[in-house]
Image (cartoon, rainbow, N blue to C red; front, side, top):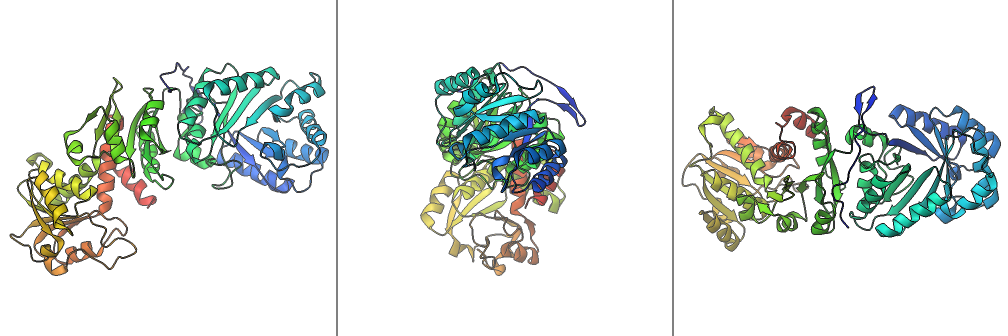
Length: 531
């Protein structure tokens, strides 16, 4: 089963901030031990921009149904969804079932906007109310699966069972075992003829919570504070609105993301989403926790899933899934960026080398006043690359492409020789580099981890040896000013920070994703705020 191109109706709704491209509501769960605390949380939810609150009665320490519901419903500053979740459906209530259902009926009478009734008891509930339901209230009939996400056919049958109860709104929440599980919920959501909430719980289901707006979900849940979640994988309201531009997502929004494992700490969504918004590009950038790259790409094969950054450990797996590969990425043997062409073909690039080489070129131009038009300032230079791992490979091939004379210095000579022979360069050991100075004005690029936190007093090359270099680049960016860079600067060399490589590759990827010039200052400012 793949998420192929699906016909989606486009809708534009006017908001105070301009065009809103979806009608999906943001619901903030209110989970507190007292009624007063719940009202405080509800006011906070309104301030944050939520559309409604889910009042979780099962969290209250003491509960006087008529008195408490009257206060909660009448004094709540937002529309209310009343949920009284029992233990057998993942909640906290462990009392008499008839009392629980009585409380939900009372919430209807007192003017709640929505109530949530579990599928397991929905027929009993509807029989008990005998069609007596205030016109304004909508009943959500829900099903929660905390083990997995069933097949497309099984979810379809489940939705039919929920509809057969008389539900106004269908809610299906499943659990992600793999990121591809969300695709099945998207298929159901987009074809649903009735309002539907479709959520895939857990970190691997995170995209379902954001992309519900693209695929027509009735609502998504957002926590009032990061971490205070009512279900695993739930984003915060602030994150939905400010980081993921939730109101601007529409049926035609293009999906991008960073593919890795683990991925939770990636800063990339913080760079690309504000950048997309700043140029009015209709795209989103998500963290994608992927186990199997080939399965992910096959499942999300629609033309709306268009661009990916690759990080550890998937750069080689991404390489193997490409239909076409940029020549230098092919030589390096790994990609860090993938673009889906209009014909569906997947094109792979290695932007790590582009980012690093661009940073070095900028440093050289700034130091000698050369213009961009006069070719690469690396041409003809002696370019020493320390380290022969993935980053070393990228720098060595990048240097070769720019016409530099490449020297590969590595702890083990054989690995240096292997890489040097591929780029028509020479190989030496790191020990030999100490006394290597055939000429002055050389360029040095460190791709080893020597000097990285926590061992910030280490350096891969002595200060004495640095006097022969006109520019020194360090791929390490924690700390930003490594001992190597500090001593190079003291020796009179131009220095280039590792953060510049990250920023430059972000510029390159942004342009490949959007076809637009990168908002460079905005990306720089965003990175500075998030590091």
